[in-house]
Image (cartoon, rainbow, N blue to C red):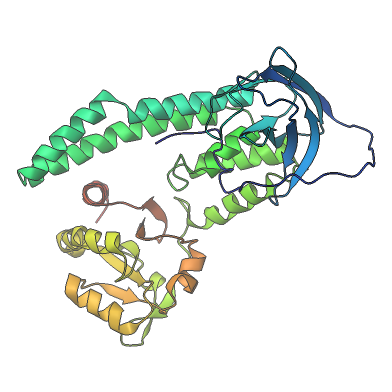
Length: 383
């Protein structure tokens, strides 16, 4: 996976910079000098500095031409931390965060994917470190060795070995992501930290406390910034289904039309499982859920299946085909289901494990991870 600085900004399309009027305003804010060298400058062409606003609008702020020695320099007034885009001759675009520190931006300047180097600010040093950590995680020799063993185990149909290798991979992956989360957690509030979290490099469910703390720091540090409001709103919606919270109530009809409430299952450990007939990953995961259900149903475990199907026929057919003998509900409204909205669901499979009081104790457990968590729960739970 190629990690670029444009984390969180990739939704912005190529744009045409509009000419601004002649009206002059008194510059306010911090002077930030951007300088660097262009490998392939375009004669008589301009480097344009534009602010990228939260509403995706682009506001031209300044421009400069390259000097004869292929260098350039320009000072821009920055009232508060902001996202900028530097347009080199309409050939190469580079996104930067401007705050209080001068930047050095060196580029090829002749191709969209040309060389680009950004130096000089804490925000960009942080982004570079994140990039390096992700690259190290992807190129981990231990992971490569596990992948080779895994392919061999698959060919031999060695289910025990496959499960063992999956668990080892999860341990390595968890250690890497925990390390990255600790690194991000120690950073001061900044737009760079917000962009890393908005890019979902760290699972929002698993690391909700990190998202919450970052939102609180940003609100305190940049209370008037237009860039942070959407992020803070997103974090607030996450709170409803964070680990430790009481799961929102679900009251929907079962296949026979009887309305059943999630709260009616209190006293048992409950896996709230959002799924659908059309969802391939859901169907592939169902045998694992069936296995866990059969193993622990007599010990106080059950499943509350919430279907995002559109028709009763599809819903019931999948229940029968996959042998899902637990409680099922649905309003057959796809992602417009009230339950999907209450739980902020935008993709499935999605599941939550609840304790006997209805509090969320884990999320999105798959395969061996679900069985392992249930084994842990029932080995320590009071009868």
